[in-house]
Image 1 (cartoon, rainbow, N blue to C red):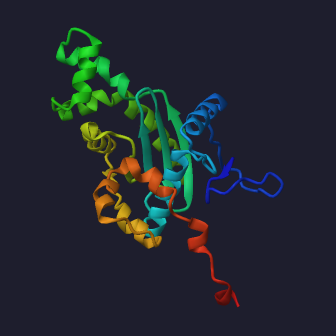
Image 2: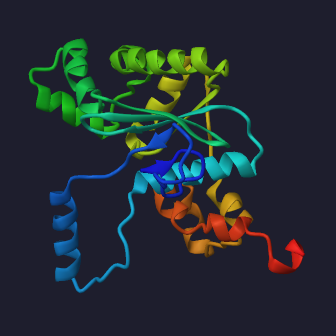
Amino acid sequence: MLNSTDGGDFDAAKGVQKDLVFCGLPTDDVNSIQASLLESGIYPERLELGTISMLGGVVDYLAQSKSKTPTLVLEIGTDSTHSFIVTAAGVEASRPIPQGLDAMVPIVQKELGLKDEESARKLFYSNTFDFTGMGPLLTKRLLKELQSSIGFYEVQTGQSVGQVLNTQLPPKLAWLDAAVAGALGISSLKIDPTAWLQSRQITLPETLAKTAQDIRWFSLLGLMAQYNAANAVPAEEKK
């Protein structure tokens, strides 16, 4: 259980806030990952969830850029989607949605008249066909769920979600980012990780600068930043 504002561990004895982030993964998965690492001679000091470091990075990025716009963050996977609404103040809302990329495959098969689902899947993931025009149809079910979450948040807070960030789309499906943003009537957030990391006194070598622009690496980059250390006031300044 983490505090939704700063990502710190929730202290049940001292905690007074009602909004928490519950995060984790099945113990069997942890054991499997640990066994695989040990077999490879890798001895990690800790295990962290990429989603959590990504959210922390996005919140810090919004704060560093002085953005006040509530942002929809999406992790669209093969069989499900994790949606979050974040601001510079922290994680405002989260919701798992049982709709992912694979749910779009049957629609591709039907609309293009393909003989089987496997053919549709290969075409969908191959980037050899322009699916941009089919975007609203392919994302219809997912968008319905997202609009419901956004609507609830906006009614509760009086704030409007103004941008979306897709963090896991492979390059061949990058068009989905614009499709989702367009259907929701909001803009796509483009993060410059290099400038953000530099604000945290982290400099990437030139050989990695281009790779770091791929948003899929942002969760790993988020692990590099020491937020508490960066925000700490030196002892001499406290006097």
